[in-house]
Image (spheres, rainbow, N blue to C red):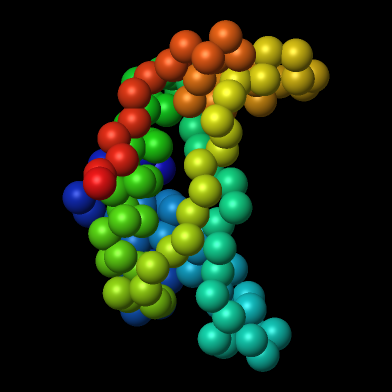
Length: 126
C-alpha cells in the first residue's frame, strides 16, 4: 500500500501489481471497459494516508505514502492495464480537519495542521 514492495502484491490474470494503487485504478478501468467505455481517462480525485488515529496511521506512513504516490504518478509509468499512461491524481487533503466528526483517522489526512504548520514534508520535483 505504501509503494514499497519490490514483489507482486496482487495478481489478476496476466497482470501483476506491486502496489495497491495501480490495482485499484485498473479495477475501475476494467469496470468502465465492461460498461462500454474503454478509452475514458481516469482521474483519481482523492488519495492519501492518515497520519494519526490508528496503529498504521502514522506520520511516517503518511509521508511515505504521499511521497511515493507523487513519485509514482509523475513517473508516467501508468498501470499494468495502461502502461505509459499518466494518472492525474490529487492528494487528500491539504489540511487536517480537527473539527470533523467521525473516526480520528478522518481528521488526520492533511499535509498541514489547521494552524498551517506542516505535519510532514512532501517532495514535489520541479
